[in-house]
Image 1 (cartoon, helix red, strand yellow):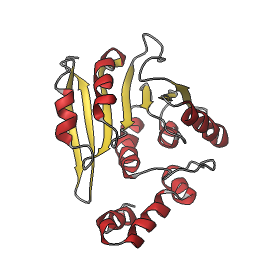
Image 2 (image 1 turned 180 degrees about the vertical axis):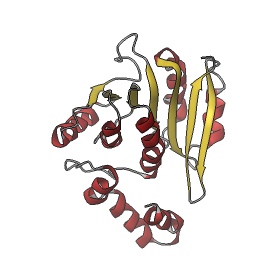
Image 3 (image 1 turned 135 degrees about the vertical axis):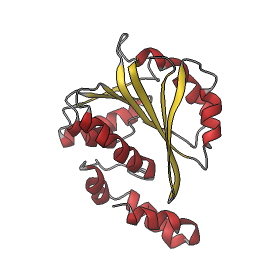
Length: 218
């Protein structure tokens, strides 16, 4: 399943035709449906998903199949709710998910309706501002906006997340380590003693990584 992605990634810098093929692949409703089983409404975007979305899918699916009653939160749902839509079939609890941008939330809600994703709850929020007080989650995940300044989102995330993590809960963050080096993620994480690094997953065929963060105690 990873072979087409591996080929695209390994040859990305060797020619414009490979970059064009990459854009076609990642912006294809057919490949989106193949990977995630979700139909996306028409929208002018650079890509419907990226490699980090695929890695998060592979990593989170077996976790949720084993823990179907976990409460789950996706941060940064994007325009299609594509990852939560896919993962919702493996959990008995509705997946909560939000985005800071109203237009992305509106588009994600269209995807939800189109695909009858009744097990996905989509709302607008600036980080945890609109998450109901007292809510806790066993699993959070975010495909980070890794081309943005991490100080503008990671610091706030690490500061605000602890009260919303259930005891033993984890937060999985996916990113491209070229624009966002792991050392930068960990440097910001170290400022927040309520959280700790639990795991790092790397992949020999690409520079995208998954970092798992947990409560320092509990």
